[in-house]
Image (cartoon, rainbow, N blue to C red):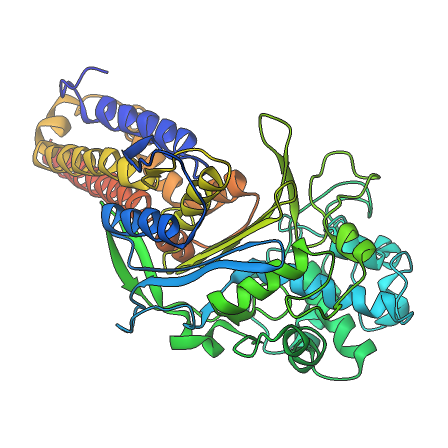
Length: 502
């Protein structure tokens, strides 16, 4: 691309094109390559090698804090904390952290315990157990309990963007708020990841179980598993330090408070590395805890890990997704994301290994939990793990260059507004307006930025949430929009004055 400033229109047009390429290619699903390698003659999954790798990662990526739990079969390999919380406390294996959407697997198992008790039938409509669950779409009456848990209910962000709406305070309010919503697809035909599925599941547990959802989880799951420092909360403001954490930008991290989100059932569990280890063991040990207590049948655990056959386009089971590596080995996993924290839980059925990682950096720009998890998976499978920097640590500098370019082009356009007005003085108004039209593209991009990122993530959010998720992209787009606004204003005023003078 030529950098010669022939006209501001060409420059900003090039900026928009390059920014579009950056947004499309810098998808938060992979790193830009390793920054250093952790070498050891024979990779072994033990406490020392885990500590070595994670500490390397924390140091090289400037990750503020993380907790890690690793298990094999029915025993704990290692639990630990690294770095500090946003409030400055040292993170340990007993530090309570939000695990976001890792909560879904716990909600699903709570429903399945009711199924085991004969109180719920997976293939009956939810409405039979929860009459308050009604929607504006008649097809919602056919949504089954199984479809809610596998997220094949037909509900989706495209039809009901829950994070852009006023946030409820209770599960009753969350379900009631869906009365005017429509479905995106026919129930049972397509998978659509959508948090309200698990609001409905949690409310079903509450109604059928006869007690508040949080109390039910504690009595039926957490207490039997010995997860004494684990609880389910209703909103992010109920989380430790109100879920305050960090966002990444330009190679560093910034502490940010978390806005209030409703979380019960979908992403409201707060726990520790020690308790996560107990959770991983029951998942890899056919429903039996480390102290030999059966929490669920082996068939139930298997079912929660198995995607429905009726939905061929989905690898999503019940709070877990199934992935296969290049060699065909299965990997059962789920990620969890808040604006200030991210988490990942992974099960390796062939070896009985479980891995859980929670970091206090937010979604998109702070994909640290998946990066650390991948390193630990490599270690577990006899490969040398590498510290792979989050993609944003590279992409942000590219965006920084575009931000400076946009500011420079905007300044140049404003300074040269009078010269531009002289050149266009004899042109008709419609032609002048046409020449200003390309400058509205950055403004349009800013207004649609949340929508574009939502398409990439299959989730809907707001512009404010985008500023949390990827600050460098937001600042770049906002700078371009501001520069375009300034140029349009300066040129319009200059053209008006020139025409009045003549």
